Length: 151
Image 1 (cartoon, one colour):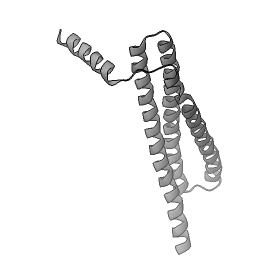
Image 2 (tube, helix red, strand yellow; image 1 turned 180 degrees about the horizontal axis):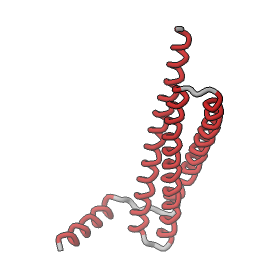
Image 3 (spheres, helix red, strand yellow; image 1 turned 90 degrees about the vertical axis):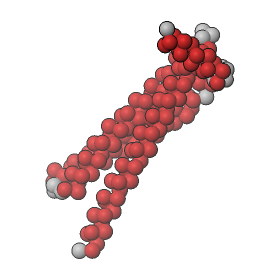
């Protein structure tokens, strides 16, 4: 019984706190999500190219630095996959939100839109983490160059 009252209170609070949204509100995210997905795809393509060239280099001359970089690239590919997944899920939820709002289920549309925004935030958080890993990989290369110049 307490759960039902708490859920009803939460729903009422959400109705008060969340302003009305229209069909155009989730549609505003389409250009942003599309551009992010293009950027994520470009990152993925750059990584695949880098992995292929590093793999060829490693086959001819095995190097521990290359192995460290390959491990970093493997992690980054998985992160980009997650970035793309959450970005696509966010876009998918925006479309579902629009159908829900079109059917005049405004509260459900608000909840779905909030979920879409959360998925976009998760995608952006993965993107930030991937950038940090990329900087770490670049630092490995720069350190190797500095050590090479010292010798």
